[in-house]
Length: 294
Ligand code: NDP
Image (cartoon, rainbow, N blue to C red; front, side, top):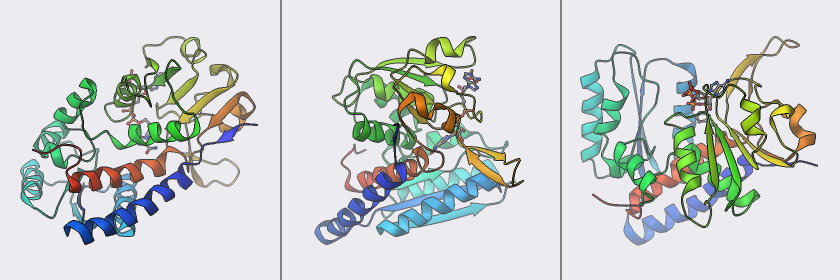
């Protein structure tokens, strides 16, 4: 019987812990963690994500600021927001929701976020620190995946983790995180992408498969060895042929692989809620200054 990796429950537990830590931080040091969120344009998924992040901030007692700018906002205006938030003492974390409209260069914006406020972990300084194994803000989705594996699977040392996807947001940082020589990680990591002509040849070797392609239902039982652990990062909107309604599915054909796997994350309710929980933790740590300071 496959074990369900319940990201929703773990995220709720992490938020409850954080609520208490936020109260203590206020009582002991008069600090209230603050997160500034910038949304540019009308991407419906981005709007949902930003709303969920702001709501989660309120739930744990953070200050949160949301700026929603029109899709044709000039790049300089975005730079100015980031510069102002970099200076504000009550803002400890800055998150610019991606993707940005075409006239705004993503990397230029990320470069301008003070690295000690970069709670998404996308600034090159944090990326470099992650690769070097130095204290840093770890991107939220990879951090959430490691937390789930730590709780449900245990030490990964010597286990073969196959990551499918090499984006800067998920694939690359999760591979870097899991290969670190740390007690929680120390895995043997293989990274696949569209250059892999026979994907199953690689994924069938995985003790842990991390699917982060953004292709609905591409992974089936033929991609897995018996008893593998599956982390399904994909969030894909599909129309249910029976009801005609839109629903969210992962990259993995959940029902089909269930008899073959030891444990699996559902979509929704697996990795997604963990991403927001880890964003809150990163913001808390930015406020305490415990990760690293300027
Ligand atoms: P990207 O589109 O940036 O990257 C997808 C990666 O998957 C690329 O490296 C691509 O390879 C690879 N890929 C695509 N198709 C195949 C294939 N058929 N075989 C092998 N590799 C393939 O996506 P993201 O990393 O941003 O996101 C991936 C998914 O995770 C999406 O569904 C996204 O919505 C979801 N997501 C979920 C989060 C959560 O909180 N649960 C957070 C972030 C993302 P190549 O590089 O060669 O093009």
